[in-house]
Image (tube, rainbow, N blue to C red; front, side, top):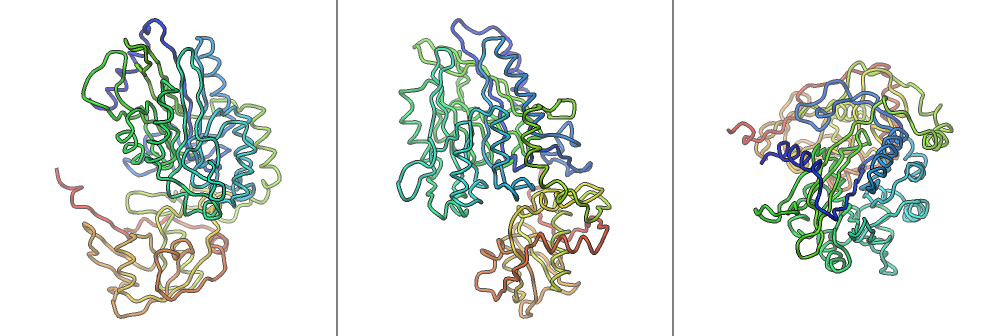
Length: 507
């Protein structure tokens, strides 16, 4: 049955009076907010089929003070019906805006505490801080941070509480957190945290909790693909509140335990995720019912995403907390350094925001070619003034610019292996093979040596064995100098990088 039809059917069923002794719980959820405490906008034109295309509102959306108002309203509505409501975050609260650059997660945790969050798990970007800072954020939080697979290397104790068991009426509901294994490569983890395989950790925790809890909820910062694997590997989990992959699941997903249609049991694991940046608030309503053997199961659910728009008044208390952190830095990050003559966004393989960064670094460093790993440019640019805040949101990392000299054959291997965004190069890949590549209009020559530039993160794994030098200059600062010099920049949708899979065209 298609997910949309299933979601509509379940929404209708949820409205039907439940069996005697049923309990209800509403979970409001966010993930991958990445420092977006203030409202923001997406470009007007976005790639067909992208998550952003599905948004009903793209301009002046989000903002934690608005989110707090909406969450409070829903809590009050559900409380009048005798139902509990939890507000949960699935990780990566920081690393993405000037708030993160300046306060390293503290502004986010303070605002979340004021907004009334109940539970959260850790994301890999929290570990982009020092371990001492991660511990400080944990101590600051008034909400419970749960993570079952992050272990203090020195003491072998969990970095935070692994799980929590709560009562919803007569039903015992256990929550536990999971962190992506990718976090193990981040600075704080390198200092002293081991990250266990999330599925192995889930099996262990669920075996410990099965006798203590009736309903199992996982708050996962592992990504939707891993969450689906997790649901199949540990089918005892009733709900996964997900993050990390920035997936937009408008009505959730279901991973079935079997093909059977069971009475008073959805017979599967529900997965929800609310895209990114707090532009929408995820909501999943659960009803628990007793089976004939006396155990509890989820027998009805409804999942949806609620837009956070300017129609929602900001919560004054939360707005005051945000302003307390924003006011000292507002003049610096509000400075206009250039103007965007159009929207810089990704439209299929044409990624104008990446082209901007790559062109800027190549020109400023005097290189023949420039390479940028996908995922390293974090935000589009909307037509109009470009502020320092926009630049930091586009490039929130502390990566420096690396120059290098590489042969055409080495560059060919990098293109094949990593499929980077580029400047000075045009290339086309078909079914994993490099069909063509050129530099300055001339075919890429395997025996020729080219002068290149890239960022220090990409250089760390893509340029092994290649002669390179760290300029010591932040990529973000070089980009800023370029924008100041240009004054106005225009997006390039020029087909310089084409990655095709023939299966796209097969019926």
